[in-house]
Length: 213
Image (cartoon, rainbow, N blue to C red):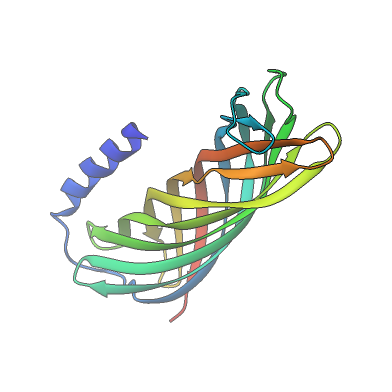
């Protein structure tokens, strides 16, 4: 993450030299994306009721993702401000490696986010360096010996990206994100067991967008 932020800062400094906009970034766009995500499902407590005293190892989770996005941009000079929503299927999953806890595995089925974007054009204005931050929700399955439990977890997502307009209507982007999720309590009544789960992760995705005239 530090490397990505340092690279973004360096490119932002270079971008100050380019203020002309060959493309008008204002307007609606829609597109599709694919990528890869990795992280941890932290499980810091377990038991029934509370307080919790038993600790289980984190589950390493990773997997592919793909989905679609819809957004709108406003451009003022070299600055571009926008809002974007997306939804994506993931096969992110993992387990704790048999650390002795009652939760055997964690799967993230799908996730969606609503984010703001702020960026600045580079060079002739065909390329946009931007930052993004907003709210994200995940649909999560956790498995124990006798049952599976499904629950949603939400949190904050932020990242940086680089988007290039290769025609008046089409663009492609590469984006890095980090998702800082809240901790949720999963209850397994058949197993007589509860577990706190927090699914923090990082991701890199490539997207293609169609910009409406």
